[in-house]
Length: 509
Image 1 (tube, rainbow, N blue to C red):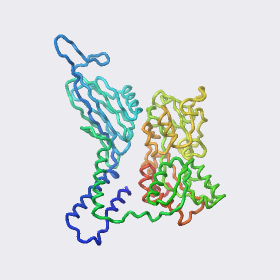
Image 2: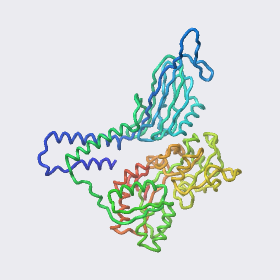
Image 3: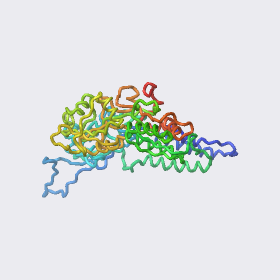
Image 4: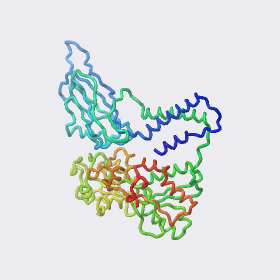
């Protein structure tokens, strides 16, 4: 949001000293700025939940030759289909937000007037796990009402798509839809797209047009407005600690270094406690070297008078499950039963008949593991390791199935690729993995607003630690200020973090 406003501010240039400007030029410039503003509002402000469907095929099945001498008929699963036709229906999440099961306030359905659904298959899904899950739900529950297909309530992430191939009986034609999606700053809904379009065509067209118009505007008014931020400082800095926020810190580093090109910032995440311990040890031996370190920590570091921590943002964590489990919500009691080894199959929790494979962080340096233990398991410890590769148990006689990996990224990668897998990770990062569902805990979905209203409990404050107080004119101090600046806010929010400035003092105190 701030980045969009900042870009518009760049276009609000000082026209003094340019002499008389004719009316045509002013009108042209106003039109150019207006077009850019429209695109920026659409791109940055109107985050919609949007399902788009397209009828790719809707045609009767022709029976040839037609004569009194030849009797040809169409059969589906052994039964004759009178007046047969086929429909190929594609559905895409074309909006700017993930769609969770609770977002479907009115059932999404597709109707085929004057026709009866005879057969149905899910084809060409992205990811494949989504299609498999939909097919299982359609086969096991009543989502077909004669001439209507009801879409099962399931998580459909941004960019997900799937196709329904239907065999129908009857002489009708056409497809209609109904349904309502709640949420998103601009609402949401289900839309018919009559013609195929390339991925992101609307955004690409707006973007390309805006770039042309911005170029024309720059040609009209050449103004030197791209000055580096006031807090640019030369030097070297190394950021260590939490792997949960490592992707976000990399984005922040890149954004800062793009403007402050003489700042040399490297990242070496290895775990929250590992980072703060390394900072403490380095400071005790070489305070000057510690002045080039910042340690990110999920929660407060161990008590130390030398370490100074600044709260940056709240990290929203989530329990993540491979979609193959067919589970979208769990209670804290159920999670404690899973991690205590009392529940070992998803079927016991209303899901598929699949073994539960726990993927955990190596402890005790992991901040996310500590937060999971304290906020979800109520202080209980996790079970011992029974698998090295997270897929197969090393001891076939072991009752539970659990492995450990070194980083948050590894947790997400394993849960994404292994059937029946479960783990815990930072919410923003989990959205990049198509075969993962971030489950609701005690009926509360993991999202930033649920942290702000205190209904969601699996979160922690992210602190940036230094050894003693940084020098006023150091890169260490400059980057800390940047982390908590308005320029960093859009990056934090895009990755699912909540800046402390946006929350009551009690959250980050």
